Image (cartoon, rainbow, N blue to C red; front, side):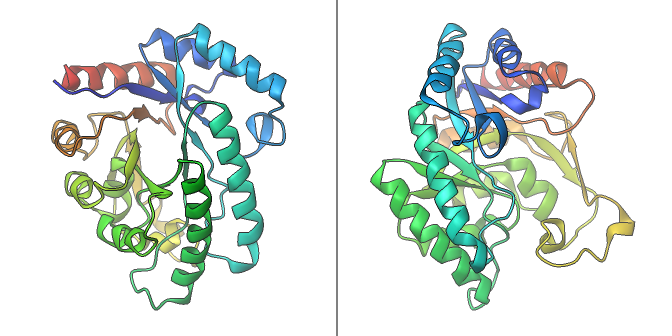
Length: 281
């Protein structure tokens, strides 16, 4: 028997905010992760009154925020963009704290395998600033796994000498994009995991992650998608072994269901929650 609360990504329901919160509660979720980058839930739009209203909705449904998604869609590999992106990320973390969570998940781009790659230092400098800010607030910017292997990501994180930049472990991304073993990744990244996604999928063919994430031109578009997201239990993630590994390292945080495709998102999320409860016991 494992002790993991189940969460759900608000946007995965594809419903208005209030309805998505009610649906999350109805399937037995304990938490919500919400995008707060652009639009109605961005720091610019979330006035104190709107924050109060949103928290009241959450409290009425018995939910908390497991994390806030702060992925701004650019990564931190472009030195000329990073000043603005870092400042916006800080404002998202400020909002997250007001909403009662100290975790903001984000994509930072593809960490180069070779630290001598100039982009490595550009990304590292941005993450050093983010880490310092998060440390000052007892919080975390959590890098979502997937664009690189767990070993490469750990090497990058170790170079920051901080837990202000940590890990949102998405096992499906590791399996689908880079063919990494999510169970081994748990042990590799054990010191940094502060949030996880519950998602599944499989690799269709091996493709350079830098093409997938737009770092370099995609010369393989004609081959179609390199991976397929699938309902939990139908992809290549060994969830019983994965959850056992998380339990073994002492992780007790959220398993936040993320469903990025499919025609029946509410049914898929409920099925995912039932699937997880079947393993958790």
